[in-house]
Image 1 (cartoon, rainbow, N blue to C red):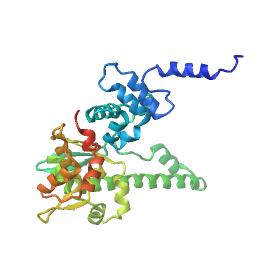
Image 2 (image 1 turned 60 degrees about the vertical axis):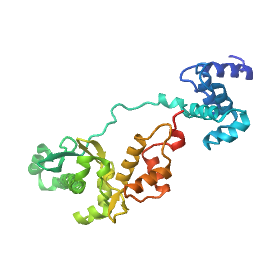
Image 3 (image 1 turned 180 degrees about the horizontal axis):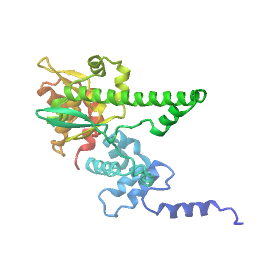
Image 4 (image 1 turned 45 degrees about the vertical axis):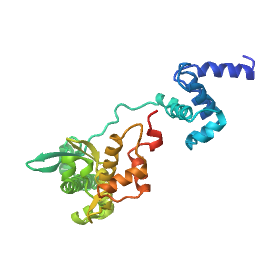
Length: 311
């Protein structure tokens, strides 16, 4: 048996492991993880040493974008503080996640195919995704040929099989009817994309199809349709109504698309703040609060203007 390792030996072993790829693994906390990644960068990387000092002792100031505090603490210029923070934000706080196994067979099979027939977009069943079940002819024949006293168990099994088949048929019919109702109301989306999404609630589809709202909710959960614009979950087409200056309405989904277009077209050195985005939307007749803009921006996974600013 080996004698127990000393603390010094443990530290040496840890340092050796931390030299393995990717940089940042085997760190004892977030600060050490980020510091390891920074030290792995070329020594002439701009503001690397300042970023190491900040990662070691002032990460909370990075989160608050407290450049004035960093300037006082580390006696640096605002430009260097910003550059060091930008360097830190580009690091991976969880470098080990790249080793997580991903099942290559996990892919989406759409339940419905959307095609343009004439001038109308139509929802059609994807027969490859429809579960199929039928009574096996052998068991049906055995039931007919069996004696009356032997039929009890087989009769119950046949009844359960027929019930299952009817349930599957009803499920498929419900999914298709809901999809057809969605596509009928969102025709402009398939022509122009998210900016043309109309406001739509589950209750509207439920009322139109004479179904309970919970039934529609289940029929849209984890169900997908394929169209020339891509594959979308049914729930993508449901969006609450927002008022416009002209007295009309637009959907939250279309507002998110407008925000994305504005950010994509902005000057990287002078990115649009949430207040500025709200003003630009108001200029197009869409009245939304800054908080709403912040929420929608986060939903489309865009960082704040400060984090989008180019160095």
